[in-house]
Image (cartoon, rainbow, N blue to C red; front, side, top):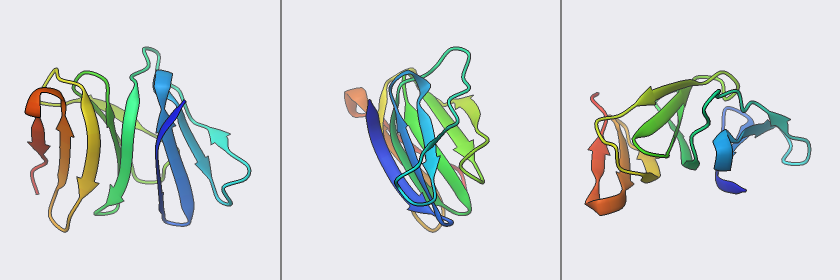
Length: 105
């Protein structure tokens, strides 16, 4: 199931359950980029500062500069992350139990 969608750099990026990551240039035909061996459950995706970022299952985030190649990283929490936003200087993710994470600029 798709949980989040964003549009930037001429492509849509959708993320969701079981590591789902899809891209589309027209929102009609989608390409699957879900390649995680142990898939996280992505909840939200955004774009800012030249990078897509997705957040989700316990303390995980994924980054991509093109929407098709992703690097999964652990964050400073084991809590589930529900949403992510970008501002001019950083990314901010929020999650369960009041978790608020901010990336370093």
